[in-house]
Image 1: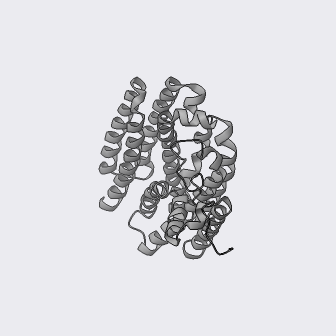
Image 2 (image 1 turned 90 degrees about the vertical axis):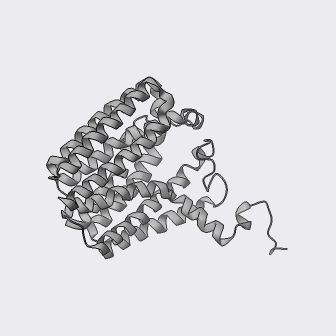
Image 3 (image 1 turned 45 degrees about the vertical axis):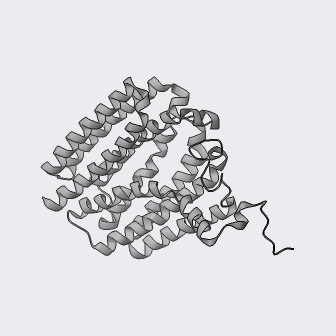
Length: 300
C-alpha cells in the first residue's frame, strides 16, 4: 500500500524531531559559534562601547542565518567527499538523514533569510557582506579551491573572516582600518587552525582526494607553514592595539597568548602528533584574544 513506510529509505521513518536535528546539523553549529565569537567584539571595538543590545542580537541572528545557509550548501556540494572521510561520514547527507535537494533548500532559504533579516533590521552593507561571504564560501572555496589547490584554506579562509566586517558595518555602516585589521587577524589565524586539523586527518583527505597541504607538501612543510602564519598572526594582533587604541589589558593578553600559541606551534614542528592540541589551542587563542579586546574597550 502507498501509505506504508518502507525501510529502503531511512529518511522515510524519521520523526519531525530527527528531521529538525538533521537540519541543525547541516548548519554546522560549532563553526557558527566560532564565527559569532568574532562578531560581537568587532561591534564593541567599532562602537568604542557596548552597542545597542537589540543591534547585537539582530546582527547575530542574521549572521547565524547566513553562515548556516553557507554550511548547509557546503554539505550538499561536499557530500561525495564527506562519505569517504571518517571524520565526516556521519554528517546528515552521507548518513542519509536528509536528501541533497532538501539540504540545498534549507541552505538557500537560510541564506536568503539572512540577507533579508540583516537588510531589514541592521543595514544593507552588513547584509551584502554576509551574503557575499556565503557566495564566496560556496562558489570559490567549496566548488573550486578545495578540490584544486593546497592553498584552498588560505584563500577560502577569507569567508570566515567576514563576520568581523559584518559586525563593524552593523555599528558604523562602513568599514575602516580597524575592521580590516580584525579581518586580517582571522584570515591569518585560519591556516594554522585548519592545517592542524588536516594534519590529524591527513589520511582522510588522501582517501577523499582533497589536496590539503599535508597531503600535497608533507607534514614537515605544513608545520613550517603553520609557524610562519602564526608569527604573522601574532604581529597583526599587536598591531590591532595601536589601530583600535586598545589598552594594557588587551596588549598584555595579546603578548601572552601570542607567545603561548607560537610555542605550541613550534612544539608541533617537533611532534606532529600534537596536531589536535594545536587545533584546540587555536580556538582558545582566538576566543581569548577577542574577549580581551572586548573587555579592554569596555573597561578602559
